[in-house]
Image (cartoon, rainbow, N blue to C red):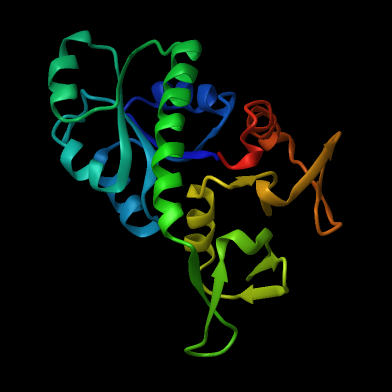
Length: 242
């Protein structure tokens, strides 16, 4: 499972710093970055929630503390990144999941990501233990196809549609690409291995070099960007789904 995040900071060098650090932190992707809370909220309303919002505190217009209640609607965890230590009490009063003091430390950032990742994995196993299937839009008007999560081997995002390979057949959906991708990225049994591919670990047979071999006989390339998170998942022994 890979966590999705955004970052908010009015200082360009601070945004560049957290972008660089997150790019080398396993198990997390920075979806977008913003210089103010307003633009971040607009993005979240349009493209949907994220797992973590990294937010500075001292900013013009709406600061991080004032924006907390609005931001928490669109994220599971709000982590503050600030140069000031004296806001900690206010931050945790607003339900913050973390408080990282600038200049950011890579080791502490990784520790916090790992901690929140464990929390997310537990909650999602409960959530998706109850949610067995999803409906996807078919290739004709007002048509819908029922797809069971437990039957998906992998999916492939193409130019204008998603190809979903299941143990029974292949389904195509032309609408709702972003939403379906977000749904599967939040599911604990799925992990992204490349720009276009996300697989179910339940149907992963073996890994050799940079290739993932699936139980249906297909082999898929593992992208360099996703290799660390994928290797980490393998080492944790999560293939059983427990």
